[in-house]
Length: 139
Image 1: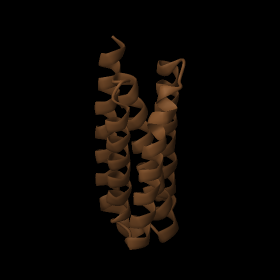
Image 2: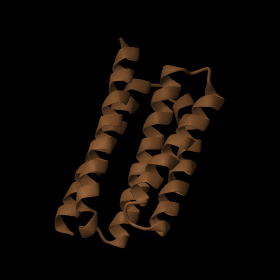
Image 3: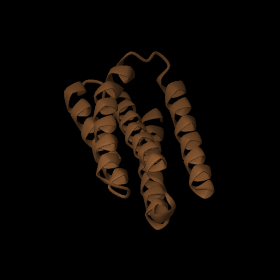
Image 4: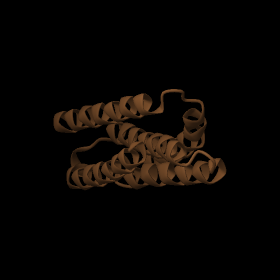
């Protein structure tokens, strides 16, 4: 039961990240440099954190592969969002995603109540998306 919930949440995260990217792509002319940098850091870091913790919870004995995968995913998402603004934002999103991706599986391995933390992390992700939406509307 827990495994199917984790896989569903992972799928929902992917859909939210892609949907938010499409929204940002339409609104990128309104986004300033500072907001764009914060956006790429939040999205790269949250993607790495979500994927690292979700995957290490799902497959706990594949630590090396999950660390590499979460770092690559976090760096790619941060770079992907950063390229919408400029190259400084690209580098910031890339490095933040890589660093958080290296740390996320370490956090996931020491959790005692994994599902509670996963739900908290998703609430934090949705809250971060809400703050970014509000910031873009006010920009």
